[in-house]
Image (cartoon, rainbow, N blue to C red; front, side, top):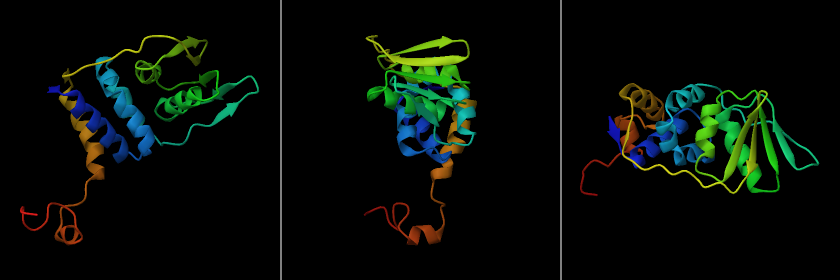
Length: 174
């Protein structure tokens, strides 16, 4: 089914929040939602949402490098990109669970991604970012799975929740 890029970005953000991903990380993934669709990485994204979301555990070296062991792309990818925006010269992600997700995250940036012997390295580079425009075709089953995560953020439709301010109010004229 065809979806606008805005719809996809919104759904990716809401699904991440429903899965318990911190807001900043969810926003990072929302920004690359078009790349997730274009590179057939939404199934990998859904698998990552189903995992436990622990912060990336990195070690900085005097050389200015960052190493993240047992890297989970959903959390470690944005952390590595943030580190590269600072003083970090190179980020190494060891035992990365989804290289495809990391590729999507890096695509709209000027960061180089190099894979070598079980390690994935991110380094600043003067590469041209890749852009994606919509509308894009999203598999309805994938969309439904994203929506299932997103629904966890909704307020229950009960009289008690309405009395506490949820929804549009008792009349539509407010």
